[in-house]
Image 1 (spheres, rainbow, N blue to C red):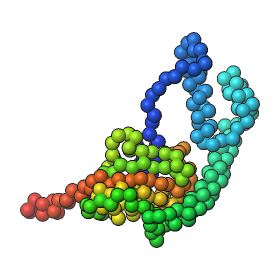
Image 2 (image 1 turned 30 degrees about the horizontal axis):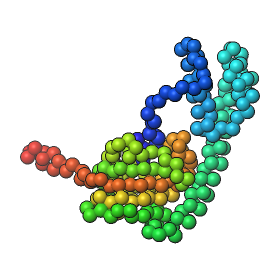
Image 3 (image 1 turned 45 degrees about the horizontal axis):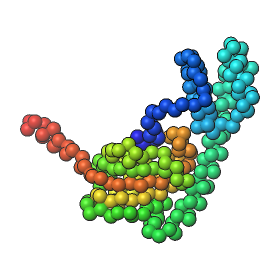
Length: 235
């Protein structure tokens, strides 16, 4: 579920097993294969560029108990700087690509651009009331990057989610208060109204412009506050 206030987690695919060319003769064989793919997935998800020869050599050294030629302290310091530098490179590119996308998108038919930079397009206009910042809403949504890649979808999970209007990213908070209940809109959210320079998940890089299809299913008002604890229990 996409936690729009802080992080995003792509929906997990259903568990499947397919027959391949590997001939697993033991649990050890299968564990080895799984760990190998986990390592490769981590490398790909973090977009690390690696030298396969050196990578495999380091794995072999580690498995054989050979000490690393780079101390743990130096390795940690290097990786922190490397990841920070790579995040900046990715963030700069994402920001530039997002700005170009929004610049082109604003001239598309039906797209409205607000002063904040948020863009939206009405697919279906609801007939209900509009939520306030303090309300809780129930929505169905699908989130994609500007290249169309889906990173999260309540539609795929088969159930909507509920959250406070003022408890999510700025682009959602602004847009939801403009949407009548029952509406379905497309939202085009610049990085500054989304997660900014943060990368809340491997699927969403720093400074990413995000695109959402949002259906506002229902609105719930906050529970009324107890009147001064019933006027201090009538004294």
